[in-house]
Amino acid sequence: MKITNHGSIISSNQFLFIVNGISTTEGIDSRFQSISGLSTEIGTEDMRRRRKQIYPSASFETQYPNLVLKRGLIVSSGLISWCRNAMETSSLNPET
Image (tube, rainbow, N blue to C red; front, side, top):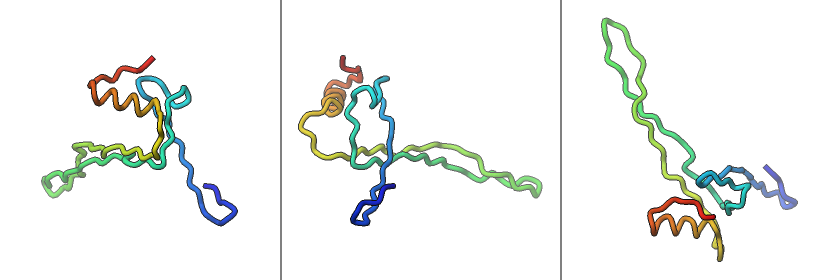
């Protein structure tokens, strides 16, 4: 965290964003105002009691929330072009 001259706190987190093997350090536009959905939920279910013993809960289904990348308006962006092309053509091939 960084504290500005006005006393405001600025939180800074960095994430490595990889699309088809190309990382953010190799030229993909990856500036976002906020990122959410980086979590995992594991469902559990209690086992039945047998002969006066209580068995622990067992893990079952793993769920992941939607990944949401919020950003400001950018006129031209390689990431926006790649996403638009992937959605319109159902193709996830990297551009060269």
